[in-house]
Amino acid sequence: DSVRIEYIAPSDREHMANTLARAGAVVALSDYEANPVAVMESLTLGIPTVGLNAAGISDLIEYGLVKGVPKDAPPTVIARALVTVLKKFSANSSPKLPTWDLAASELARVYKDAVKDAAETTSSLGSR
Image (cartoon, rainbow, N blue to C red; front, side, top):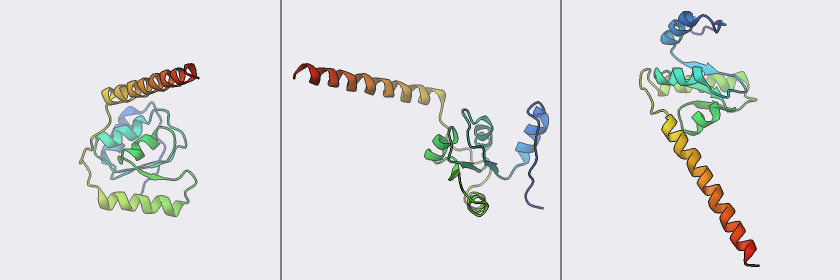
């Protein structure tokens, strides 16, 4: 009576929105999410979320926004993670989510570091 698992057709946006609005928690068990939109929507609504430590979701786990479980986690580990988030987090607590500006500045930092490293490598090779 406490858990409901269902398939919602991607085209049924109204049913998807209504279901998400009523959720006490979200569990995302996809082993690959290039852009975890459903997870970001649940977080935006303040819904505690558990997710596999996989592409896309792993960044949200690293930021502490999603309770992560290993890809090969047995059902008992997933259930414990779900119980943990239900006890620890209250709905509508709206965590501070990463923004596109933050993503852009972090990407710019990666490129600047790469250019700096390349320049240092070139400089040290030239002095040999």
